[in-house]
Image 1 (tube, rainbow, N blue to C red):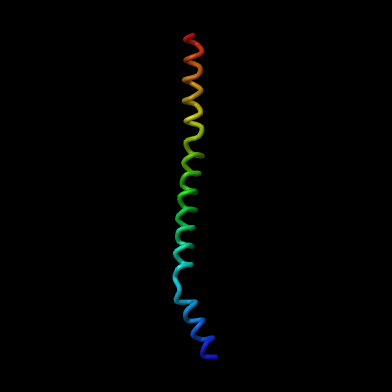
Image 2 (image 1 turned 180 degrees about the horizontal axis):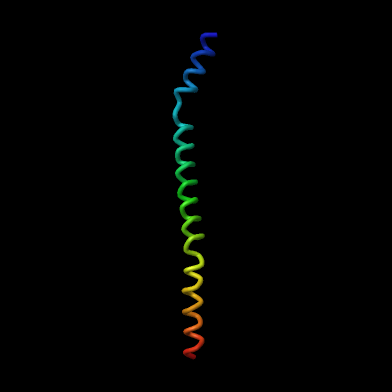
Length: 60
């Protein structure tokens, strides 16, 4: 019984898994920010490229 208690204490004291979860949360947050920026600026960038394309087509 004492060995089980010591094993559980060692398991809960180990913070290596917590670090991996924190890195996963950081990656998920960064991905969410990138998606939000692309969604927000997507139409603006598309309009800009369309304008440039039209200008180049009309110049030639």
